[in-house]
Image (tube, rainbow, N blue to C red; front, side, top):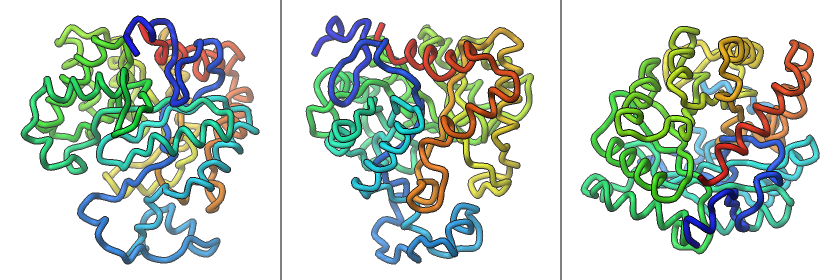
Length: 347
């Protein structure tokens, strides 16, 4: 595969497709993934089985001592069923951003895509510092860049399954030297291949802007950058609008996660209605083409099979809420179809 082969097309795990075939797209999900911190994975005590009696408490995230099972999306039959359910609700494509450190499974994604008819676009690159292979801390920018270019043009993680987006590229606050090298490499790989980049920012309200400024200073086109997890990072309109003004796409990707308790930082997690109000503020300031949405499912307990909302929540529940709250069909189409299509089409 060459860059010219990809230009003007979207690359799925089953091969390139025409952008018009993409349809309604979730821009940030995990279908097969292990998000347990690496230091905990040797512990065979995964905690209780997930039941109707404990799923709410497990999702709330506080008060269950051992919950390793919650963090493992490793049941391919369940994943296939969940993706098929999403398709039934009206979704047609998923960007699956399980990258280095999160146990990516490219051939598993191929089987799920083939078995459901849903377009799966795979990410590449590396997650945050804590999850990286210790050997990565000695690698050069050029080495990381060559790896990502190969993951897009040849195949990722020892397979011939090719990535269609770079990311989610992990950042923490404060930003580490290794993470900065991976980010520089991602920008080089994006320039070489024409892929877009998805960024996982650190949990500090100013870090999305720090990363966006870094990317702009590097001379990379900001319109090919997606900043994830805005809904656990930025809560005020001035910061949000300043970020969008720089040209990056802002991603609200925790739809369905409505518990106020958030164990990873001291914040009040917004609900879906609050997310829609912030998106409306972006639209009011001319940024309709800078918004995408998703669920970022990376826990079993958020799957419908285990009592959660599943990948269909946005199509089943959020789109009707958008319609009730005055979103036009054109605005909904921009957020779910046109913006993902633009970002996923190689340039």
